[in-house]
Length: 359
Image 1 (spheres, rainbow, N blue to C red):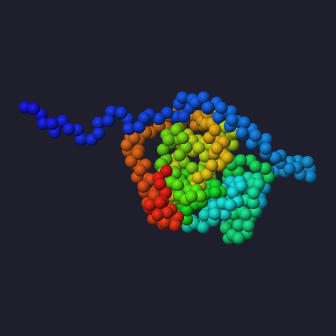
Image 2 (tube, rainbow, N blue to C red):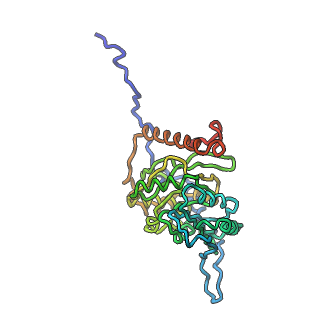
Image 3 (cartoon, rainbow, N blue to C red):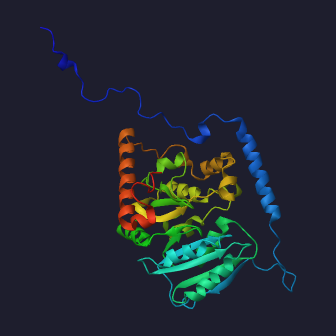
């Protein structure tokens, strides 16, 4: 008897090709003729940057003065060390820095101290921070100053050297923490004492308003082999930072200091906990560091492969099924948007019709 055509039906897709093409790490892809030119241009721009830095001033004894100085302390600095040290590298962000500082100390987590390093700003950044410290005597705040600009990683490392908290949160001077952001991150680390750091979803914004979301992937070390997906705004155990020697100041990693830190942590078997809801706001803007570091990735990836060989060779690969991976990303992004809307309302993120779209 002839078989019913219904019996030949197959429920579900019959794909024989992958749902996404195989991904190759950047250094295995075919090089562009512009790569060498970009690398050379990057080196020239870094050379010019170094040459433009002034020399340290000389004291009465003819010796160069120390570059790092304590510029100002709040009245509460000595008496109120915080469990969380919010560290901030500051360079020419006088118009944004007060909003960043207020976000750090005005949230629901009060056990906070702030360490700011003004990296030789040429605007009024240091004066603005001093005036804010005078208006905020009840908060533990220290302002350090570089006589000569030394760059982002050096500024962060100097801030870490003065931090007293068990936990360090990295906040750039033009970004902001949400009122419950630190609470969520601290709670995540407290719930998992073996985790080295915690990070959450970030809302991106610019002068036009909300833009989207970042940081919605959970901790998956294999992703780092293909690019950085975790911003610097994370809560890190200070002991881990000190053990690794802080942020890399190697020239090849200019602009990639955060990425390098996550790779080195993954290489040594450390892991992070992910908060799947917005914890901070990230300002989207074209900065000189971003534009310079994007000229060429060749030297930076070479450095990462030397510093995290197991990770970068694929030894930590742990692929999810592509469809499951995609569905989980959609769910996390949707949940983060819903949480953001319910917490901040239309004033912060816009109405559902005009609010942030998924990054």
